[in-house]
Image (cartoon, rainbow over all chains, first blue to last red; front, side):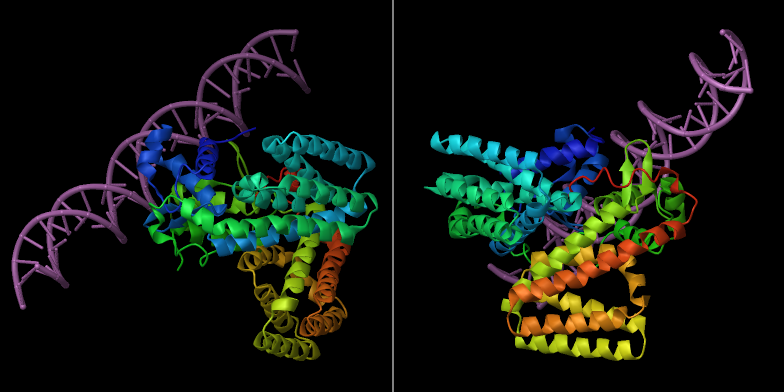
Length: 236
Length: 236
DNA sequence: ACCTGCGTTTTTGTATACAAAACACTTGAC
DNA sequence: GTCAAGTGTTTTGTATACAAAAACGCAGGT
């Protein structure tokens, strides 16, 4: 199912960036990366262009590619859009979700509850992923599902650490239950409101973490942080 | 501000596809296109990959690139997402829009009214574009603005012909006024509802046109239309 | 007459070679 | 001593060359 070499390279680079191996602002040298992956510059350049289109790196013509961790402002904006997209999925899903999907949702929710009781953030994390993916799917709009999942994925690294926050899992759990109830009753607007708040909280919690994150960001290589927010061009 | 050669090529190809010069399902031959643009295959391939990421063409590994006009199902889905995104922009803009932007919106709306009176669909079209772009901008979320504008642009060719429909301009005009009023009063939910309906109508009007469009689509080259809807991969 | 297997040809994917622009360093002038 | 201009090096962007896979055609068999 996977296709060309450049896709594998793009995936590998993507993961490396997500995992923080490449510090923000770091330059991605084509020659050395090509050697590292054992390919020529051609497929590597294709991989870089793909990453640029997904917003993970910034390509400055004739100058090179740089890891582009979004600045705080853009991150908050992205979280806001995420919240709205989830709300839309929820509102649509409320009138379209099937009984079996509703049951599936409850099953996943129960697994979440167990993970929360066991104090297992990783387990909760993966079940929580399931929970949201199901809602995307049950929006009955494949295009919406894909777009929402894409942004979800892009925000993943910034969401991950938040479950360690005190009491967050229990709170998240309660919010999930309210969402399920709204969906079960076909109350689209309630589901939307609940989902929006559920995700927006992450954005706000993240907001309060920003300063800490910024310090944690490897001090080296951030020389050109000013780039960040300004130069988004509409991806299409 | 424009960057590499491949970007120009991508723009040109994009326009060619939008304008219907390349029929849906047509194969994009790298060699001949490279010759046509007077470049080598390298930048041309980069352009193709960009188009593939924006969903305009489908690249099948080892087989080639094909023009990928979205099928009716996906188009309806895209219009639905468009309606929701505009609604979100409107709701956010209601609480964030500036007085000057509100005045700007009214000015554009007046220009729309004149165009409608003159029976000038093209004039109405361009002013209508302005109208919506302002709302995107006044959402106060640059990320949202970019994403919404990208989808708007992608749906452009399918929206264009609708203004010719009888009475559509007058109806659209009235809807615009209701949207402005809601924004002026800071009524976010009302603005959202109005905008959602305003855009959804386009999707529905389009829906009734689908069969006609399908016939109009150049009969040649549609041999492989089955591809269309199924294989969307999350654009990121 | 139609299907099948092999060889040819075309076309994609990748590597390498070349051109030109940006960067770094040296050298010279003030 | 500092700044500026020029040269050399590095690195990106593009062209070309090569490898491999798929489409095509043909011949032979059933």
